Length: 204
Image (cartoon, rainbow, N blue to C red):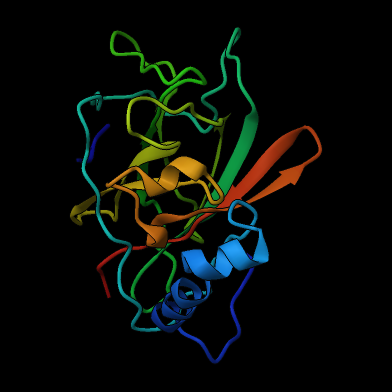
């Protein structure tokens, strides 16, 4: 590398929406509804002045100089197929063309390839800030729930290192790195699952 939505009601910003969701999805409410694993928050629309996407730890398995590719699927890759799409936006909700996104994650058994570049790759957002990644649903390991690692960088900007999580996972609660602000919106689709997440970078 050269450089290191289901929408909410328009009257609710991202911050207000997440506060309301967390209040509604308390353990008592979920237990009463009997839907602890079915509930998931929609991804709210970006609102001018939003907080940027929060960072998370890089972890021990990052490998630099991954290949440029939008599909991490290779012959022999096992697991549930998923397509992740979204946009890279500024705090004013403007698209960031050519933003760099570098993804890596475990395989369906929870193992990382620390020798080669299996399930690793980077790409650049298009001129509308959009990205599209084809890969698989990662497995769990240790205390870690299912997640993707990603580094996102505006041209000439700072690198955001963060993680993305799956809604409805029972192990989300035991993973102390889990953050509800980093939940993707995930739906089942014919032939593969589909997920969305918009990154908001701390740029104007």
